[in-house]
Length: 59
Image (cartoon, rainbow, N blue to C red):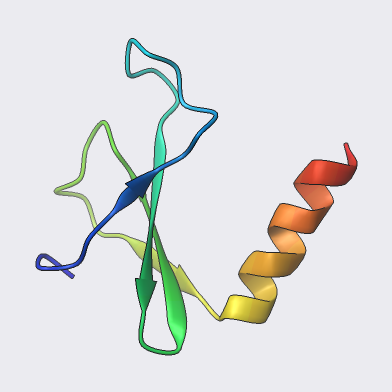
C-alpha cells in the first residue's frame, strides 16, 4: 500500500492530532493512522466502510 494515495480526514485537526487517512484500493478501502503511517493499515470492503461512515453521521 506504499504507492497508494492517502486522503486525510476532513475532521482531522490542523495540529495533526486524531488523524485518520483513507485510500481507495481495488475492491477495498485502506484505513491508517496518519501520525504513524509506517504501521500496518487495515482494510474494509466498501459496503462496510460506507455503513461505518453513515453511522458516524447519524451521531
